[in-house]
Structure formats: structure tokens, C-alpha cells
Image 1 (cartoon, rainbow, N blue to C red):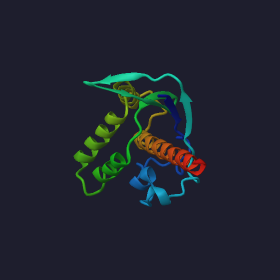
Image 2 (image 1 turned 180 degrees about the vertical axis):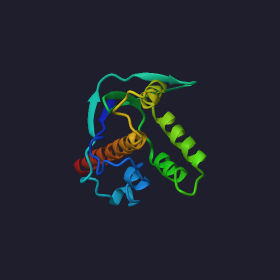
Image 3 (image 1 turned 30 degrees about the horizontal axis):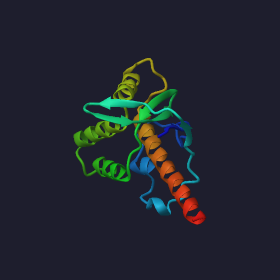
Image 4 (image 1 turned 60 degrees about the horizontal axis):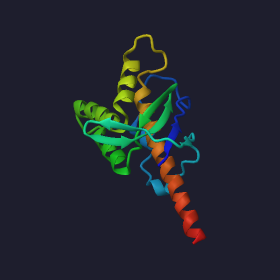
Length: 166
């Protein structure tokens, strides 16, 4: 098994105001993934490495990928389609604010190693940190989502190539 490295493009902001990102900005417009044209979105670069590092998370061990984000190399797991769907529902306007906050934290905690999660939170709490802003969590969620979509596109393209060759 190989370790993958994803690069987040957090500089592709449409605006400079301090408004939080909407669900549509993080998860798209609701168009099914198979019908979505994501070629116009900033690409997520994928590099493959030979070594795989396992991290212990409680009693569970999981292999992780890496996400280059705001100068950090974060240890991540790509979210599944059901995780993205559940997260989108959990942070909708119909959920109480305390549930939304809990679900953001849960989603990130389940898709990042404990060390990376702690590092992100520490940078966000640092009053001298200019890079991590009130948009950082939204950008991180978007980067995780885009990396997952790019990975699924690559897997589908590889499967289509294999099927065509057979």
C-alpha cells in the first residue's frame, strides 16, 4: 500500500471578506458527483509515496494520507461519500448551532490523526498566527472534500482504462 500526498489550494478565494464558507462552497451545488464538472475547480495534486505510516487511534490503527495545507503536512483519511453527506446534513440550518459545532469537530477528528488535529487547533488558537483565520476550518473541509473527489475520479478513470483494455 502506498501513502498519498494531497495539496490544498487555499489561495483560490473568490472574496476577501470574513464571511464563513457556505455548504455550497465546501460541498458544491448538490449536483450528483457523477454529473458534476469539477474541471473548473482548483486541482488537488496527488503524489504517491512508497512508505506507509500507521497511527494508533485509541484501539484502532489506520493508515493515513498526507494533506499539504497552509504550510503544514497533515495526516488525514479521505472522507467517504456517506461521511460527506452526513456532514452536510449535520451542519445544515435546521440543526442547532451546538450540534453543528460538535459535528465539525467530530468530522475533523475522524479524518485527521490526533497529532495533526491538535496542531491545527493550536495554530488556530495562536493570536500571532496570521495564516489560520476564521475561514481555515471551511478551507480544510473543502480541501478534504476535493481530495476525496479527485481520488474517486482517478480510481474511476483507472477502472475505465482497465475495463477498456479487457
